[in-house]
Amino acid sequence: MKIKLFSQKHLDHQLARTVFLSLLMLLHSPLPMKVAFSQTTLASTPMSEDEAIQLGEEFGLIVGEVDEELRAYLGLERAEGVVVFEVIGGKPADLAGIKARSIIKEIDSQDIHSLKEFGTALKTALTTENFSLATYEPADPQNQGLTGGVHFHFVRVQKT
Image (cartoon, rainbow, N blue to C red; front, side, top):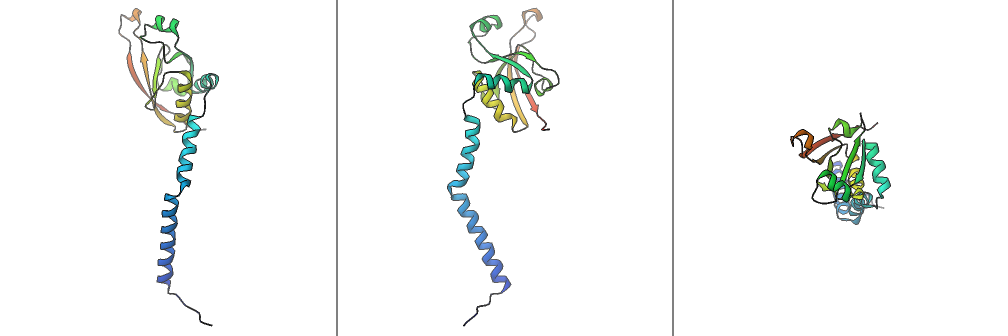
């Protein structure tokens, strides 16, 4: 019976090689793609309008979808997007400076055209704790057009 002895240097080299090959196989296996897919699936699962409204309230906004009546009232070109009816004090939306009558245009570089898109984008953004939100504020005729324009808000959400 022969017993083969290896030096410590040889064993360290073998361990490093095994670890390297394992990592290489892991990087090229379908597993990482599956994990990445499940993260994007979380954000792309169907969002109902009620869920979007609830998420908005948790964030600090009472929102609704822009319809023809709101389009005419706010002087917008198209009836699309999400309008802020009210901002709840002390919530992240209030702290970020979002104002009532604003139209939410994008959340973390994702264009917003509907309540469902708003809910999906907000759900994803809230997990990051730091994100940007762009709003369009229509000019207020009572302020002689001094207000209005696109505003960017930087949001920080602290987890409890």
